[in-house]
Length: 141
Image (cartoon, rainbow, N blue to C red; front, side):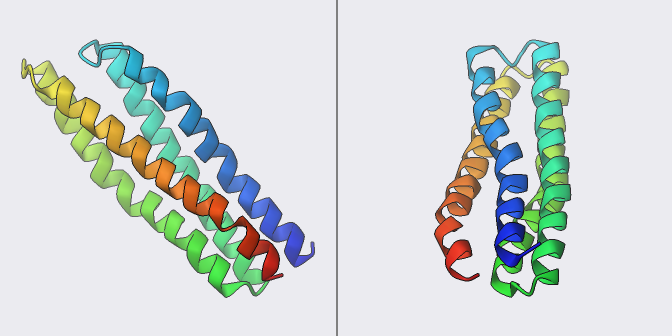
């Protein structure tokens, strides 16, 4: 594969799950998070997103390093690092709120909704940065 093809492949590998999450996660804004199956589904979606971004980020970083694209590899590596170290932090907070909701805390669904918003915002910021870097990836080849 040429360096251009590698860069395009890495971008697609990262853009696909980020775009899917961007389209799927707002649907949870239309439902109440005090309903257990809905909240568990939201938790599962975030968990899967973090896992997919971890794998995609590591694969992308290694591919870019093998092609000698150090700066691009650092950028993609940062996305992988956020997914790797952000997942336990985020999922712990989500589990805390789910447990609080199950224990009868009436404010837990509101805090769960705030986590939902923060996760969507974080993904949107990373997606915008990734899309904005496309011209630089093409120019550095």
